Image 1 (cartoon, rainbow, N blue to C red):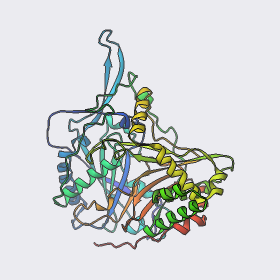
Image 2: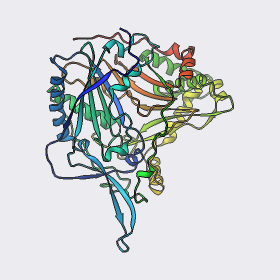
Image 3: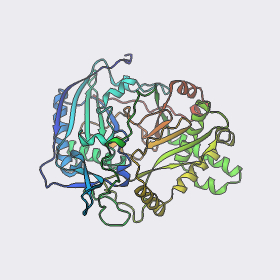
Image 4: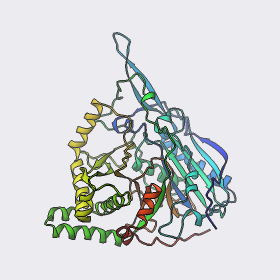
Length: 470
C-alpha cells in the first residue's frame, strides 16, 4: 500500500475525562517549569497492533476508564495553568506575577479518530533510509499549542487513531511546563498498567517542587504584571522538513564507542578515552554528519547541545517519583567546522564528554537556578541554530513497556512539536537490547546530503523485523 501524502485523519468524537473530586490545590511552577512556557507541548505517540475490541469506540471506553483511574493519582495532569498577580503590601501596586497548576479537575481529553487508507506498514517503512511519512503528524492533537496555552487548554490530550487494517496509534500531547519526559512516561506507564489490570508496585507521584533552599518551593514571583506578551510563538509557518528514524543496534553503538576510544588513545588522551560513553559516541557521529550535510563553511563555528537530566546530579538526588521538570541543556564550546571534521570522531566524542562534565553536579545546577531567578527567561529550548544541533528525549524512557492491554507497541513516533533543522530525539530501539532509534530532522537539501554520508550509514543498523499480531 502506498503511503498517502495528503491529510487522511478525521476526528469523530471527543471526550473529557476528569479525576475524582478532591480538595483544591495549587502547585507553583518553578525555575525549570517556567522556562518552558514558550516551548511546544510534548508530542510523543505509540503505534499498536489491532486490539481485540470490536470498535474504536469500545477501545476508547477502555482507555477512558483506565485514564480516570490514573488521574486519581496524577491529578495535576487534569488541571490548568493559572497566573496570579502579586501586589506590594503598602502601595497595592502590582510587583509581579506567579504561575501555578490549578488542580481543580478541569479534565483531559480523549479524541477518537480514523485514518482512511493508512495501514500499519505505511507508518513503519521496511526501508532503513525511508523518511517518516508526513501524515504521522496528523496523529497528534494540539498541533499549534505552546505550554503557556495550558491556561485555557487541557494539559493532556490523547488522540486514538484507528488505521485501515485495525492498528491503533495513540498520540499524546502533554504540557511540558507540567513535567519533563521522565515524569511524563511514568504517567503513561501508570495509565497503561491500570488499562491492562496489572498490579504494578508504584510510589505515589511527588508534586512538591524542588527548591534550592530546601523544603517546599514557594511561588516564584516574576517581575512582570503579566507574561502573556512575553511568550515566544512561531510567527511564520515552519520551513520544509524531512525526518528519519535511524536505528543503531547495541553492537553498532559499542563499535562507535570503541572507535572513539581507540582514536583518543592514539592521540594520547587516555582520560578522554576512559570517559567515552555510547551517548557521546552517537552524539558526536551525528554532529559531524550534520555539519557535513549542511555544508557549513570551514571557518564557521558550530556547537552540540543536548538536554540533561538533573535528577541524579542533585545532592540529595531527587526521588524517582518527583513529578515536575528537572532538566537543563548542556553545550559544547564552539568549534570551527573544519576543526570538528578534521580532528575526527574520537575528538568530537571527547568534546561532547567535556560539555557533559562541565554541566556539573549539584553546585552548578544550583548556581544556574539562582542565575535564572535573578534574570528569568521564558523561552528556554527554543534553541534553533542553523549551525548547531540539539538532542532531546532519552532511550532510557520505557516507551515499549506501555502495554494498554492488547500487546506492546510496535513503534514510537513524535509529532511536529519542537522540531527544526538539526533536531534529534532519541528513543529506545524497538528490539530492545540497548539499541537506540534516533529521530533526525533536517531541511530537505540537508537530508539529501545526509543520505550520501558513508560514515553515518556505516553505523546505521537494519531495524528489527515488524511482528504484527492481530
